[in-house]
Image (cartoon, rainbow, N blue to C red; front, side, top):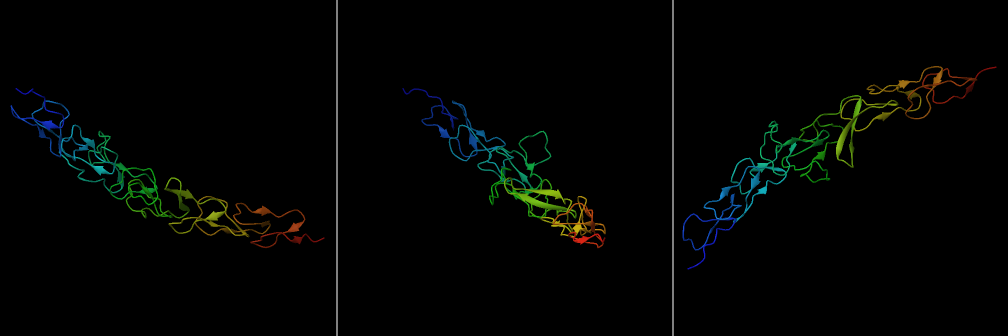
Length: 239
């Protein structure tokens, strides 16, 4: 008589006197020996092959929210990223750590994003917004949220994050969706952050040398500054 051998992992043996075990079909697995049936693949996992002894986690960028999956059943939702093993598409399921998470501020995520680790033009990763746009958390387009007047939005090329910055003194940021600021020209100044309007004219008694003047310079002793928008002093005080 032949020896009695337990059914292998990844197989099932529903009857007595079976010459060979049955293979667990895709969508199922069996992690123990001597079993009469296979187990449906768990939520958050997939079982793409025959004779699987353990399920494999749902791939990053996808959602596996039902049992018995051969492959992930859909992409991570737009505006979010999904880590390996994501088991729901409900971002508000706060009791489940394996849920979609909002794409970080300054970036956008099309469907199927699996990480916020930036890689240029790899849309499996989050990508920077267009210059001039700040993109709040959960953005799915690169032009969501125009940078407001008085600010500008630029992209940090090392991190791939678009950052909103307040316009600095010595410059102004008119309109919206600014990718940079406009520097005050000689003869003009701006003494505050977040300026929207054009730079101020240098007053009589002062001069504004160079670009980006933040504060007018008092006319030097022995000289006359009797004009507005003066760039440099040249007129000596009369004897």
